[in-house]
Length: 160
Image (cartoon, rainbow, N blue to C red; front, side, top):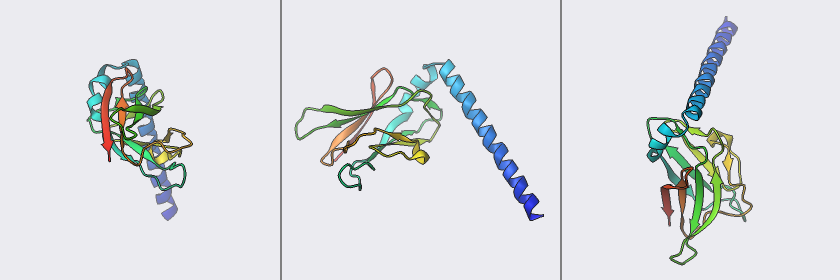
């Protein structure tokens, strides 16, 4: 009796999972066919919401990360969008440092956030990494910039 209940629950969860996968696939296809029309109009909903600039891993701070969030009511295709670190190095001049570009078919659903780590992979938060062997975010201050696929700045996050 209990085994039947467990099997029925597993079957139900599998069906829900398959429906989600099919829904996500159809949305990705619709976004890629529609190219940039709706996604570009919604780019104000994608922004840098946080930078963990002081990692705990010694020497290379591979656990530093930047969080990209979609606070709009629509899914947004951020394929080709890039994240850059801008360091001040004690001068008023800004220099661009490392750059991460989101791969093809990267879509943020409404309310979704992803992390881009300095040199770690965490599938539960998107699985993205700069793959840098040294710390990216200056512990003395700087800013992160998010640019759309045309190179236009759409968000910045200044930290100490």
